[in-house]
Length: 87
View 1 (tube, rainbow, N blue to C red):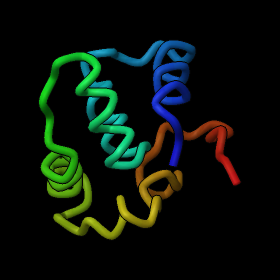
View 2 (view 1 turned 180 degrees about the horizontal axis):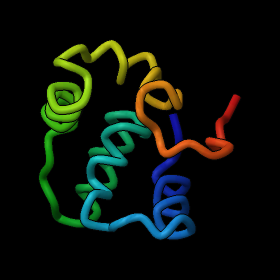
View 3 (view 1 turned 90 degrees about the vertical axis):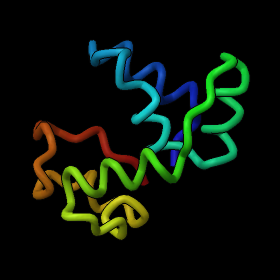
């Protein structure tokens, strides 16, 4: 898991579309951080619902890819490159 600040920095530094930042938070932060980030902005998004949507769209509904972090692996269709992985 990453902090909300790390997610925002990565989105900014890599030039990703900010329109999808909620999904990035759902995938890369804890539910507690996700809820706090949204509360601070007066937004209401559902952590589990967003994770399920990504799971349904990209992993045939198998949420274990998201829960385990396996979706970060290049074999899951990632962007490639060095991946910038973490320990």
